[in-house]
Length: 142
Image (cartoon, rainbow, N blue to C red):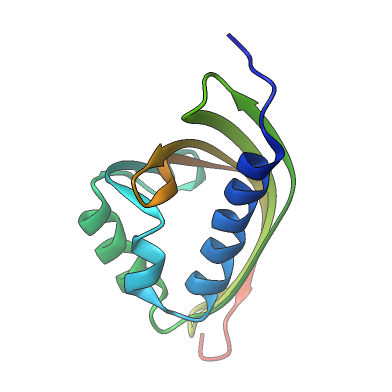
């Protein structure tokens, strides 16, 4: 059943995703991990990555991958579908820039996410990244 959301829920989910981008790009790892449920599913397989289950495993993978990188993540045009008062599916248009010693990546695509309301507020229960365009150039030290 599709339900019309309360605007405060739409705004709260949007703020979670804004925090996601800011905390990821500023490497505030512990706070970034808290945006996810403990049993989250993180799927970047369609973008050349893997599927990871659990917040701690996902956080460790992202830290290892991006700790030395300069990143900028932007999201916009959220499409939210609520299927009750405590769950929503959201598709975000996204652009990311990742600069590492070996490569410089600019990507465009979508985050497909499931949000659930918890005792701590809205959290990301699953995320799947799909890409439409990936431009990879040699990095500064390649």
